[in-house]
Amino acid sequence: MDPDGILAFQDTYPDELSHCYGCGRLNADGLQIKSYWHGDEAVCRFEPRPYHTAVPGYVYGGLIASLIDCHATGTAAAASVRSEGRPLGSEPAYRFLTASLHVDYLRPTPIGGPLELRATATEIKGRKVTVEVRLYAGGELCAKGEVVTVQVPDSFLAQLAEAAARRGE
Amino acid sequence: MDPDGILAFQDTYPDELSHCYGCGRLNADGLQIKSYWHGDEAVCRFEPRPYHTAVPGYVYGGLIASLIDCHATGTAAAASVRSEGRPLGSEPAYRFLTASLHVDYLRPTPIGGPLELRATATEIKGRKVTVEVRLYAGGELCAKGEVVTVQVPDSFLAQLAEAAARRGE
Image 1 (cartoon, each protein chain N blue to C red):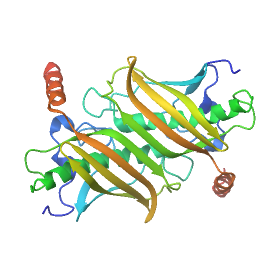
Image 2 (image 1 turned 90 degrees about the horizontal axis):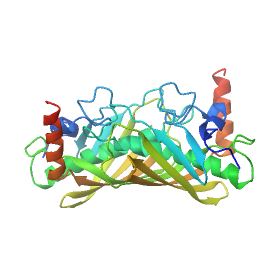
Image 3 (image 1 turned 90 degrees about the vertical axis):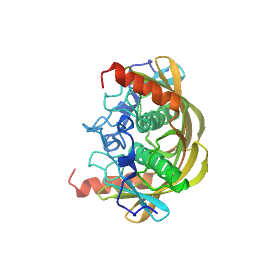
């Protein structure tokens, strides 16, 4: 339905929800990951910086958890829009937060090239979406994640808007 | 046994295992967290930087996962040394890697002050140590983690030493 690989999920987030260190396009200091549909899978490619080490030569586990987390919330938003028969980028845009994150580190992840994350929304139940993520380095599966995400509650959105108004934004 | 709050767990890691982005004292670009015994609990305090946001006003979930991860591997190392009746800082020093990480985000974590992580090693079974971590902001419990850690295998240590030798270190 959506033209694959054209529009990044994160570029559909409302501005006030685009400051995430992992995936916010408005966070200049952040990782700014981008996720795209490739058929029924959501794909994100990210090249760790040289200092994102666990031990020399291998990727930091906290970065892996961060990538899995942000790619999963993006996939949850895009899959919810798609489940309503709407194209990515149509209104309303959705934004999900993480309720729980589980990562299994299957083997040390070599540093020095792009990582590829492939995700699937395995359950969409109202405002709750479960996402499974696999992370590959050089084609080899290095980590698996399961993320339970929840659509940002309207009450929390109202609270954020009030705080922004107080700051004069 | 150890004088509480004097020696950080991470300062006992061997140099070649001290480049972690989250907790390595030799990673100049990293977070350099420090964990200390306070009685039977391991405590780490960390103040997120202003750009470590999820949404404005709240801490990035990936940072929370990273802090829980590194504090847990540190706690595993220190608890293993302690379980042998040895003081922290005695030889041999231990270093643990993460096998799996689970985080439950209980409520949005406000940004703008130090976070406190409190950890306990709940099971020490040979080279495998399970650690539970609670993360507080302003005294309020915001996230809980369970981390399964494994002592770095000797074969992997040998591999790292070889790679370092090749780089002329």
